[in-house]
Length: 99
Image (spheres, rainbow, N blue to C red):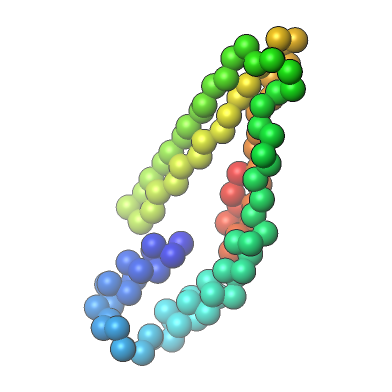
């Protein structure tokens, strides 16, 4: 989202001291007001199944468009009892749901 905003600034060819057009100013203010939500993102420290691990897998996915890209990694572990643990976290930041 912030990278797309920067791209919009480049398209408008604004200099450092130029005033933002109202549409960009509104976008900036909305992003700025939501920036504090970054502090609410937490990540569990324990991501493996309990006990001795027999298998650990790292899965990764990515996608892109002309404007942006995204990537996701998650860990999958299997212990000696065959219990499978995967960790998925969800976060909502500026109306975007992060898993």
